[in-house]
Length: 533
Image (cartoon, rainbow, N blue to C red; front, side):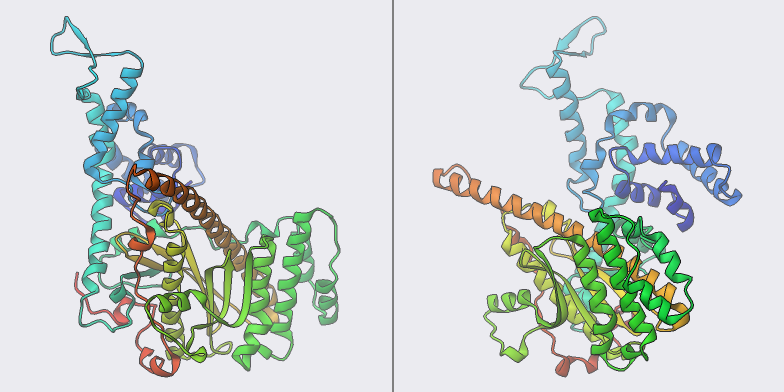
């Protein structure tokens, strides 16, 4: 039930509508909210008194805003989901002024197809719908449109307009550092990211729109192998533990079970080496990567089992950055290229960057902040390259694409994504932050944290691969159609993605830029942004 999030975040009705519009599928968010409110109040005695009180308060506002008479007529507009929001990513497909025309045209088309009639001004006569005239719909449909759509749509458009204006204004703000995210049309948000520039309600609504919930749980990738985990977590003897994780008992020969068992085996062994072998990971950045992070990322990629998906570890040149700098007529010496600590590639598209910011447990703020901004501009080059590679694909599909950045700093691992919003603006969001421990006593906790990250990372890579497949299919189909139509002079080609997606391309160099990054952190707007509401 999505209403659990509304209760836990203490949202108002407008925020709830926005959140439901991002999550509910094939149903009006207004209807779904009403159903959930009544469920909490009447059918779920296990809810706390405080939760039921919150539901009753919202139900009073709900009934006042959407009367029962109008809700009965609202079944016709459950398809508003496809008009308002694009696939859980907050991309607006149509503006509010077009909504009435869309609904009116659809209703009249149904009447024409059914050879139906509409009431005339006279009570004794009826007149058929004429082909050359658009007949205004009756008051009931107008009422549905006003009651169901306008309040939530107005909130949605004002909400997005505020954020887009915020990004546009900060791009010309002289008080911002030259490498600040907002200076380059990128909005920072996410778990643990504070904001001092807008109200908490606005910022929480933004996070509800762009961030998924319930990600901090043990994933389904361990389904069927739980008993093996319970067994090794109960072992005290070190030699016995090592034997069990290296040679687990195989109870099933099905492919899914074997791949899950292989994932668990690789992670439990790498965490064992991390925790039991004299803290190798704490001595050097390379040791930390080799002992724990590289095996973890490799295991995540291997369980997906797709030959086109590759994880390349260790000082890898980011080809997307090289491509973009070449397009800008900038030539780099081999030692000046962008080198990542690891790259995940799908169909020769860079979809994830890994940066290790020092050895395990160290707190080098300048290095950590530099790696964040280095990866940000790296992802911008990746998203620009993908737009050029599939330039005939639709902007709607492209706006679903998320590219990822994994950063290890201190004792934690962070998962970020970059996504196009609107008008050549972008969001970089921290989806997850997990803390690792190299203490033997916390071996089980670290294994579970790694499995949690692996499940989330696997899911995100699969989603990104699916969107790239869609982009490739659209590009191939549209490019063939355009070549045929161009030859026949039927119509002009559409505006290409390569013309719409124009992010800032900057190649940062650690020797030149690292020191000035001390106060330019990703964790707070106030670090590098001096803006007023």
